[in-house]
Image 1 (spheres, helix red, strand yellow):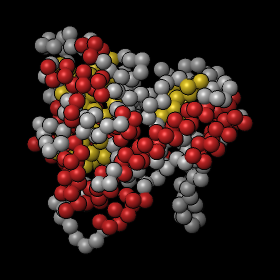
Image 2 (tube, one colour; image 1 turned 90 degrees about the vertical axis):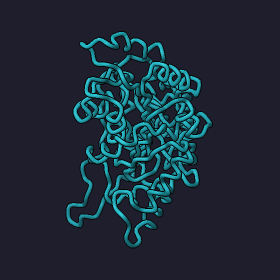
Image 3 (tube, one colour; image 1 turned 180 degrees about the vertical axis):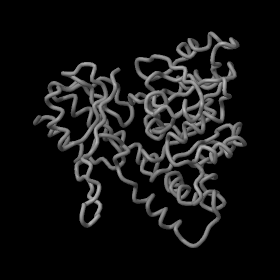
Image 4 (cartoon, one colour; image 1 turned 120 degrees about the vertical axis):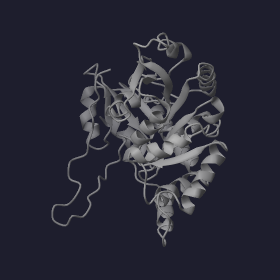
Length: 366
């Protein structure tokens, strides 16, 4: 896979005279990160902005968020809020590896291709990558990285990290997760899940958050909030309670400890207390399905991966791309075939049926 060409909006974030924020009015299918913040989340932050409260998590909002995480993931779960997904992944992995140990992951997974080298540079760990066709690891694929266990000349595998849903929008089934979890437990390896889009995966599987994490043997979870409507809020969740003593120090040392933590915790309360996480994820998934079904009827477009969550990957003629991108921004994912590159379209809680239909109409016209 060739490097992706990154789309970015015009560099005009502020009006040069009035300094009034100028937003991009175009409907974006570039990323679920392009969506705004859910109004219920903003309301929760505003409600938390009253009076004084203890810092660094010594506040009632963080206490309530901890209760909610335990109700969703199990009584042993420990919640550590962080600012971003990179911080969640590096912090979680750092809690589980020693300086001579490494992390088995899919080649071109998010921690391999899109963390800017943070696991290696900041976490000081080696990533032991495995090639896959669909970004999903299997037990047999994991075994290929275990041959040199005990060899002092080799980095020792300690953690297996998967992404759910994956970078290609594919989703591990509960049976696949359970098989990996049972194998890793028998091999005394740590099971980490990069769950930046875990809500979308759970919505697809029709299961609870616990059923697709704790119950299948996941030890450490990077729980995504930003892609599902939060404002710069993610979390490390120690599902089995095995790493909590180290994580509280790692959270501080990795620059992820919020002083006014109540404003992060309030967002998770809004997300988890009334299952907003599920409603938003279901909606984003439904919009991706609507988009893929419509695109599949347009001559010259080819859906190249199963649409299991909120991502659509489509091969499309080069001449269509720039015209459509002027009105509906999106990423070019793979340019191995320069005349027929693969684009990625992402939907979010904010995407509407009208947005999808307008995009499809523009694709048809192009």
